[in-house]
Length: 258
Image 1 (cartoon, rainbow, N blue to C red):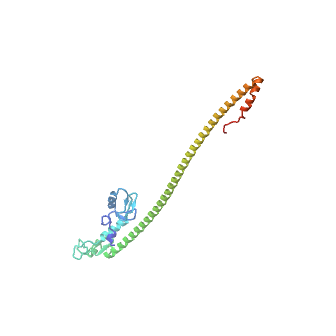
Image 2: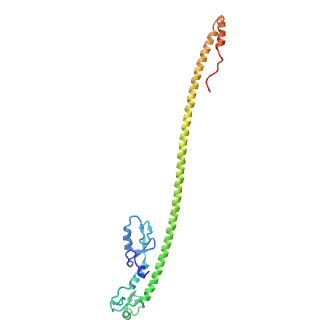
Image 3: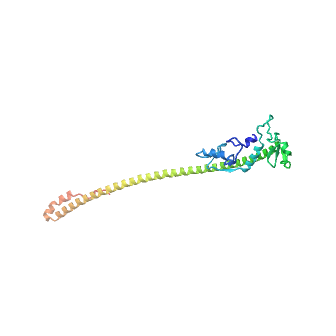
């Protein structure tokens, strides 16, 4: 991957402008990622890795911005001459040197000018390589930070999954107890209904027994009255009917079931 690719925004495909880092560690132009997220109605996803976040969050990456400015100065553009190399606009010479103080490429004539004579100057290839290494270091730091963020994301997802499992088990237990409660209520209703039926049956039998007892009591009263009447008769009449009394009267016993 070239230096220009590493220093370019994956949305506009140009050098980063006001670069910012988002939740997953990738970098974009502030305007590019802002416009991209304004089109999202649900969540905020990374255009590069598609990782989503609950809220919009990014932070300026000032170190990357400085490196990009240097990389832009070192990037070779289409040369005005046939050699394809960039040339000095003032002297029309190839820009082969890089001024450390001015952070700009210069030609050999500029090197001898009053403006750059006291400055530290290195070959442009050497300066480019140096800043490439700086960019690579910065990119490595950003990638490591992204890996940490990904690890945190996985940890949080695992905790969320554990929470979901606990919640599922809780709902299962509540459902089972609800079914048990309904079963017990139904059994209670059936048993109470059966007890009510038994109570009515006992009450009915009691009333029937009382009625029979009253009937027996009435019969006994009639017999008592009749016998008392016979006992009041004169002796001659009483003796005439004694055999009838003894033959017709059976020992009495109650006929009511207890």
